[in-house]
Length: 249
Ligand code: AMP
Image (cartoon, rainbow, N blue to C red; front, side, top):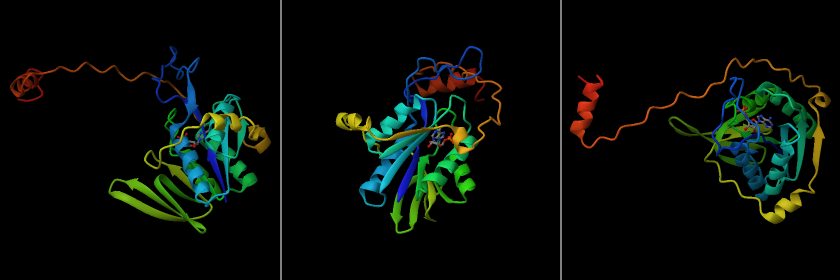
């Protein structure tokens, strides 16, 4: 079975995003970019499935600018077998990403698509669900455990009431949650090896997908600055302060 892993190049999760002065978006000039953390978890899970013998090939795919090749090389250095870049400098919304992935699925015929539950830049949490709908496949979202047996996959999901396990017939979509695994680091020899692994480049037009945006961002703004807290020395002082503020009678 082949596993397709979509990976997105996003602002590094350690950085505090700065909003552009004109409020049109986040300033990405000279900002460190990395693989979306949930996608690293997806790559790791696909590699573990291959190591267990449940998969034979792991293919990473990214939709984005030429620089997204770096993200794909990271996936290759972790252990993915080959990569596909669907190159565009345009902003690609989740529906367009899902349509591009649908076209890649038609070409590659994977048994599973393992992807992040959300990209940390836009926090859309839409692409996996839309892709499942477009393909008519089952979906196991927010996976904290994945078990492939024969032609089905059991996906354990963290829900409010505890853990829910669903069984899906393959092919299927799985989206990863934070606790699924801890992604490996790429070793230096593997980073070197990744440079010669195959990376194909396509354009959205080659796949016949219209990526014109359906949404218009009206405004992006910084969250309001939080007021500093006050340290109190005792419960009495706390109650007095709360009374002063009118929070208690
Ligand atoms: P989202 O719906 O945007 O929150 O993204 C959910 C998941 O879809 C991500 O974790 C990725 O696995 C995948 N994805 C979204 N955008 C892209 C992209 N431009 N390239 C590759 N994968 C993507």
